[in-house]
Every structure is written in structure tokens, then in C-alpha cells.
Length: 277
Image (tube, rainbow, N blue to C red; front, side, top):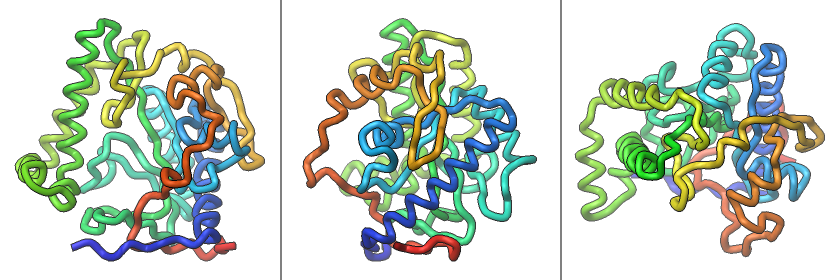
């Protein structure tokens, strides 16, 4: 059974954001040192444009790499990551880790997602490191790819889904959770290797996408620019408006208060160097 939900105070939420800013700065430092491209994206980029930093109620941050850039980054982390402060997780390096993208986490912290207390890896405050793969230009082939992505995503999620779902959905997740983790990761590795050739469409393979297209126009990934976020300069897409419009529509309009939510957590511990103020 999951622990009760921990409700962050506004001061604690801001402290979590400042830890995530540390993590973003570490990604930027390593990438600039090693000549690796990345992009702050999704809600992080939206926050940069609309708020000059974090969306006030947001509790995570998103960095996107192409597959090649991601592999360069994970290699660079072995030599250049400040291991006194941070640690890196992904499928290849972390037993029990079941997500198709990486995370960079802060040592001496806790950010335990509700219903994920049983997961077998350390859960410090984190940012997501998404991997964007090229998917087919042909619409039917892209639909088939999206269906396979859906199946892999559900299989990876099954260790959580079997605990939080009900009815037939719970039964399906229980069946999926019987798939050995090593076999699932091996099959997914073979699957993602099919999508290394550059096309006109891009998506993270284990994250939901706009259903009308099953991907983003790859042209967004062709050029980089820089943007100010929380007083720091980070890399992002050159076509910021086009990307945000594609993803969010009228992105400058604030959502209703009922949709301004943080991720449910059961435990929070801030590193000693960050105050909740």
C-alpha cells in the first residue's frame, strides 16, 4: 500500500525548483564542455517564455536530446559529472529502472513519487532527460510505430500500473509485469535501434505524443538557439514559437487553476544546501 500523499508548501516547491535548476546547470556545463547539443523543452521551455523561469506550480524540468546526443551525454557523465552532488539513472545503468529515458538526480535528497515507493532505485529530486528518435515519414508506418511505443510504455509502467489500476486494467498490468525486466529492456533496445535514420518526424518512444501525428516535425530539431531561464542561459529549439504552438496551441494563456497541479509524492527531503524559502 502506498504512503499518504505529501503536500509541499509553496516554499518547498520553490526549493525543489532551485535544486532542479542546479541539475539543469550541470547538464549545460557538461554539454558545453563536451560539445553536445541539448534542448530545454516542454513545460520548462514554456516556463522560460511565459514566466522567465519555472511555471510557478511546476515541480519538474525537461531536457531533450536526439539519440546520438543522449548517448554522448551519458558517456560524458562517466568522466565529467559532479558525483559528489549528482547521479545519473537510465535503463542501461540502473537495475529496476523501467523508464525509456534518463534522469539526473540530486544526491542527499528525496522526491518519492506516490505509488512508486516500491521501485528498486534511489529517488532523489530529478530532471528528465528525454531521448528523441526519428520515426517513419509514412503515416501508416508511423501509426504502427506509435502502437508499438504504446505497448512498450505500458509494459514498462506495469510495475506501477498493477498497484494503482483496477478491474481488467489491473489484470492486464499484472500479466505485463510478469515479463522479465532484462528481456523487456533487451527487446526495447532492438526496437529503438530501428529508428536511428533521420526522417522528418521525431518523438520520444516511451512517452505519449499528440495522437493526430504521433510525433513532432523534425525541423524543430535542426537548429538551436539559447534562452534565459531563471537568470541562466540554456540551449533550446530555434523555432520556439512553432514548437510551443504545436505542443500547446495558445501557449501564453494560463490554464485554469484546477489544472495547475504538481506530481503526487509521498516523501520529500531537500538537500541541506537548499533552504525551503
